[in-house]
Length: 434
Image 1 (tube, one colour):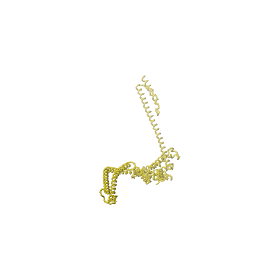
Image 2: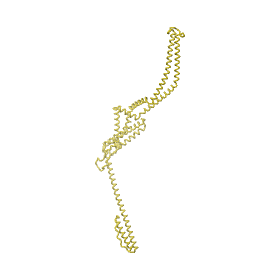
Image 3: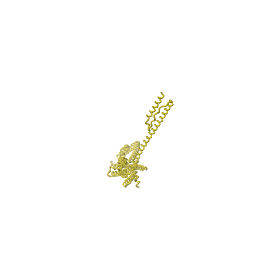
């Protein structure tokens, strides 16, 4: 198990010789395992939030790949030993390691903050899902109320109110005729009751009966006149209502169409508003909750975020804090020794190559000298042959030639050979003239 943790931390188990180093790198391995779980869940939550919480099955694959990438970076940082390759012959321990590369750790910190923003946020949104849903419901209701008083629904509703007022005006005109007719009938009933009372002797005339031309008869005639007027008013109301029927039907059709449009628009607006509940809307709701209740939700939110960032940076932080430990010195000594041996071998190879080049140059120079000497010997042989030829042709002995100078290894005596040949040619020419 210990070797497995050391392998996860990307260190050489054979070089981990002290107890403190074993504890250190085993802890780094455990932090990497914890971060793999955190990164997998966070990456899956980010994919789920990006897909509007449809819970795709492949979100866990993406989370594992993201976590593996970050762990690969951490293993590269942890397993890297800053070896100093200067002064390889120096036994001073201070020359074993170089100073830590700040840019490497700063880049890891930036990566941790980036992953904290991309991975921690979806986890926090899942943690406060109930509060966020309540806030989104409140926001959606406010948006629906705002849409009801503006936009297409407001225009449809205004036109619908106009149609209702027109219909109400037509109904009021018909109702006014019907009301007048009802009033006349009521007055007619009252007059008829008065006529009955007068005919019984209880009326104003105090006479029984209802003779023609009398007061009772006049009451009856007036009552009948009112009934006739009421009937005429009813007929007018019916004619007016019949004349309004076409306009009423048109308004009814338009009102039904407007009602359907309002219903469809409300449904579309509600769907659009409810659809605005993805990652961005939830993030805005989360920040509203944090700002409105900082000492409750805000402190807890920041605490969890910092804890996850600390988990993200734990492995690299331990590596940075343990710079120059026994493991790094052992690895540095081994690497510097190998580099020193390689440098010595390379330098010896350069010397051997240089000696071989010098030897090859000497061999080539000697070969050229020998070839030049062979050429000079061939030329002298030809000169002796010509002297003998002239001697045979002239039938007289020639004075003896000067002895041949000894040739050195290097053809530096060419001028002397050329002078001997010229003297021999002049002697042969003088004999021929004589």
